[in-house]
Image (tube, rainbow over all chains, first blue to last red; front, side, top):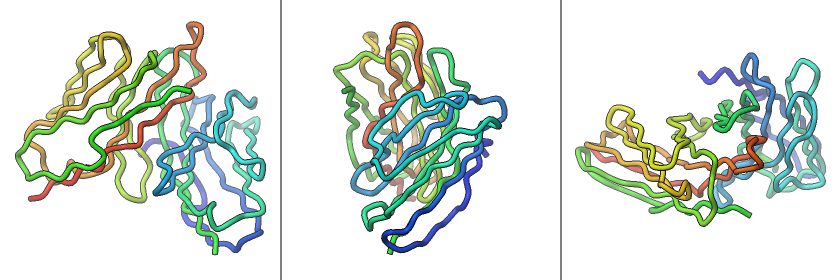
Length: 114
Length: 115
């Protein structure tokens, strides 16, 4: 158990809908990262927040947005969903400082768009 | 853009065999991490290497960071079926002495160890 929690575990929805994925980082970690993993794209970095502020952006679509709240939990919002958005979405957390910046991953949310 | 090339992409071996997975880049990384992921679960951190030339051992797994901090290898001795999984390397960028933690992941190596 990494100490990172994600809800829900599974999500099935229809095209055009909007969903929210939730992540709670390990106790004491200030950084939260969101990743998308699909069979053909591997693990793709979406966005990072550090202590409530956006710190780095990766291949995140404009239809997707995220935020980190004062209690450090984070939410990833996916809107106008398309079939191609079906994937595993992982949240990771790290202490957010130092050279190593080891990241610890949650169990993921499997999103299926029908 | 920093890229990490992992090889091989697939590896299917018999129990007891040795194997090596490579992770290469033209970029320098401040650190490199190796993860193992099982189907439907999140990647689990195995090791972090920070110093060029560093070698770390974790039971039957040996990790090495290249002298120039551009490449790394994972060697497994006497592989067991429980080693089966997706192995990912990930590099942290060098950024003015501090790092925001954004990792670049390799595409992964799918290892299958047959009993």
